[in-house]
Length: 132
Image 1 (cartoon, one colour):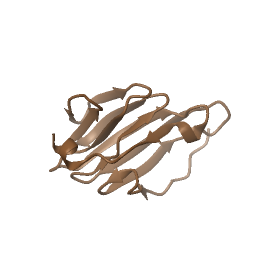
Image 2 (cartoon, helix red, strand yellow):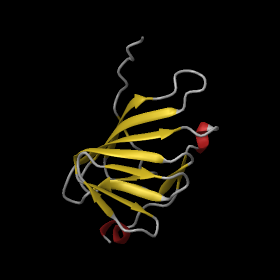
Image 3 (spheres, helix red, strand yellow):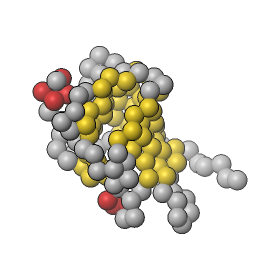
């Protein structure tokens, strides 16, 4: 057993996020053959990801606040603490905080065979898409 050293909170890059979003890594591959990534992600009101997809899918578990999640072409979902959302491999989606609420979720996914292709980032979510 090893107790992992604390990893500093980082602010997510504006190329992939709109608004203020912070990430705390929880789990990541430490040995050959491991793929799991888990992070606590905190969004300020109105903050959101850009459109993106994951090679092996992604699970989101809302822990605080009000989350908005939408798949491309689908209805926007409002999710509250305790709700878990699964985005299948290759499904383009975005997620973020409602306009009037902070939001925190656990983001869980597995690395692709080439970790650089785990997440494919696309264009930013427009205000019209976010408010739609």
